Image 1 (cartoon, rainbow, N blue to C red):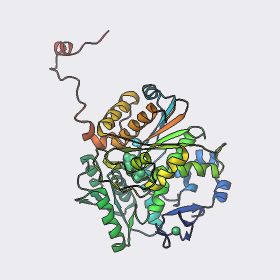
Image 2: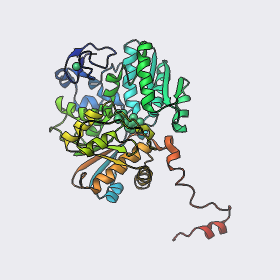
Image 3: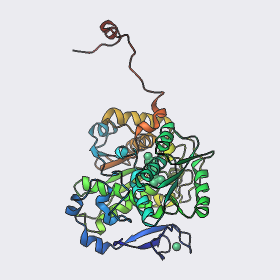
Image 4: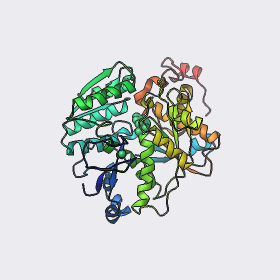
Amino acid sequence: MPYVDSLRCRECARAYPIEALHVCDFCFGPLEVAYDYEAIAAHMSRESIAAGPTTIWRYAELLPASAENPVNLGAGFTPLVRADRLAAELGLGELWIKNDTLNPTGSFKDRVVSVALTKARELGFKVAACASTGNLANSVAAHAARAGMESVVFIPHDLEQGKVITTAVYGGTLVAVEGSYDDVNRLCAELTSEQPSWAFVNVNVRTYYAEGSKTLAFEVAEQLGWRTPDHVVVPIASGSQLTKIHKGFAELHRVGLLDEEPHVRISGAQAQGCSPVATAFADGTDVIRPQRPSTIAKSLAIGNPADGFYALDIVRRSGGAVGSVDDAEIVEAIRLLARTEGIFAETAGGVTIATLSKLAAAGVVRPDERVVAYVTGHGLKTIEAVSPHVGPTVTIAPTLSAFNAALTFEE
Ligand SMILES: *Cc1c(COP(=O)(O)O)cnc(C)c1O
Ligand SMILES: [Zn+2]
């Protein structure tokens, strides 16, 4: 691990060894991975990155696990697509979609899990565990199978069938808990001390896991020709991803990969039925009040977000905003993205696009900005969200006359 210096408390900056630690013993602040940026700058170049694999591991120097033998299903290097038709609908100019629906298990979680399990294996763990709103469950089960590790995955009992099946198929242990995600997470925090030989990817190895999200910034900058966007829109569940996208852009500059210092406005997106960060933003406070979630955007349904405070701070300092949208707006935005750009997103993607649309209408996201919207999960996993609203245009008998009677097309 040549480039990781230590773990460091985000609050009091105390240093810790590179072990399965996630909170500071002194102030209970979260730990962050600290790197030797000088050494990285000397080794990493645009050319060395371009010669690397087309996965997150092309940025290995800025990840906290060894790329020699990663737990890898091919996460990352997903398309960044110019979305002119969507931009026209929203009254925007240069708009891009980071299409993270195309990861191995259909969500951005493959980035964080590939890093977490690679590190967990390095640290000697044989069992991968997690508390999940769905996509993490899929990804942990799949990557554990790939690594030959055991998996024990905990989910709320009322998840979408698509997420339950696509987790269970990998053959690990899947525990459905009668409670919300926040109940599941509390149970897992308790289990972490009971089962010290399990790597809970979002508890005791969370410090490493979270670093995987930086690749969402690295790839966007590389795909834009080593330029950064003016404004990004990011969905918020725990808030981790948003904070790491911010860290990712800053690191690229720190190691000399950008020509100019990045000034990226970062805006957050939540569902109204679970909007603790959006509510704090609107109220002008930095106290995040926990909520009991009720929304179709189950992958974002964290009522007490671990990194909410830090996400809010970054949004404010960058000049962004946090918006929220209701279930009907989420479904409408899923259909809008599908109809304009041919990308089918899950409900979290609907939250992002609907929030983008609102922020554009309010003039927060502007037509003169280069904008990137992060679409983080695939629509096939949340079919129930759209199935009441779409279906065949007509159903007809298998005859020409039936077709002609039902539909008219110009020649
Ligand atoms: C987990 C998840 C997020 C948000 O992740 P956080 O880092 O917890 O904020 C966004 N989109 C999808 C599809 C997710 O599964
Ligand atoms: Zn501390």
